[in-house]
Amino acid sequence: MDTIPGWNKQTYQVPIGGEIRLEGFLDIPEHPLGVVLFVHGSGSSRHSPRNQFVARVLHQAGIATMLIDLLTAREEEYDYYTGRLRFNIDLLSERVSQVTHWLTQHAATANLRIGYFGASTGAAAALIAAARYPQLVHAIVSRGGRPDLAKPYLDRVNSPTLLIVGENDTQVIALNRMACSLLHCTKQIEIVAGATHLFEEPGTLEQVAQLASQWFTKYLTL
Image (cartoon, rainbow, N blue to C red):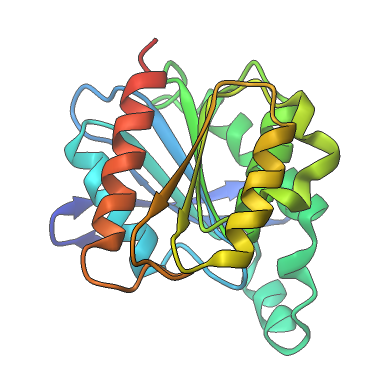
């Protein structure tokens, strides 16, 4: 079992068909309120320091987290040179769905409500998976996401959805507002002052984590 200071995690290999296994970190606090699956995008992985930071904040709020690589090591190597798989939203959303079903069967998470935390293109994959399996997903948070890439599915999303965008990420703000107008579920946009796309400015990622924690705490416990 790997450990990170302030965050306990177990490493799992999640089978998704055939011989394919996806590497993931599952962290379950005592008496969890629900479980959040992190959906990475644009070449990121379970090792993303930004998503690990958010996961630690959710842990402190009593929420279990699953950070998983949606690509295998071989696929990641191919994607490193081509950049093709990170934008294959259909592939990524199918992987999200398969991991979600695994969570519904895993003993420690089977009885927990599931939420998605999507970043960049991962937000689109999360929204598509939520549209396909509305009975399984109870809340969604997008950080600097591209929900516009899920446009054909947005009117089918039932999960309460929070879209978080940096104030200085102007193009992505416009795309999020367009996507929000197509959502028929409970929805909200939060603009983080002074933040750019990656929320690298002091205090901005902390705001993202707190907004996400509040959203999941509210909607995973209804």
